[in-house]
Image 1: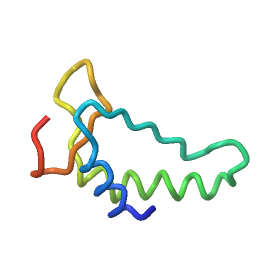
Image 2: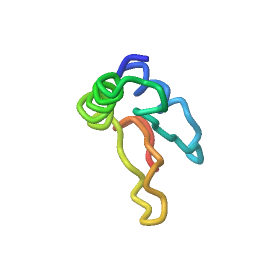
Image 3: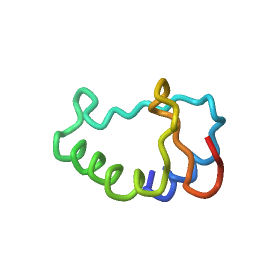
Image 4: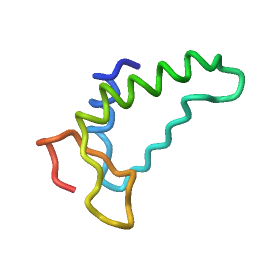
Length: 68
């Protein structure tokens, strides 16, 4: 999945969806996990907004597309 694919996927989810990221799953080379995590931080997170709720920290939506 590319960063653009991830942003599109997150934008297609319902408000109540939960997203879990496992960049270093068992057996995956550490370098691959770090590269994936860096792509997430550098290219996906800047394009989405975290929920403003103090109780929900993992609900994201593309900026400008939806209000949480």
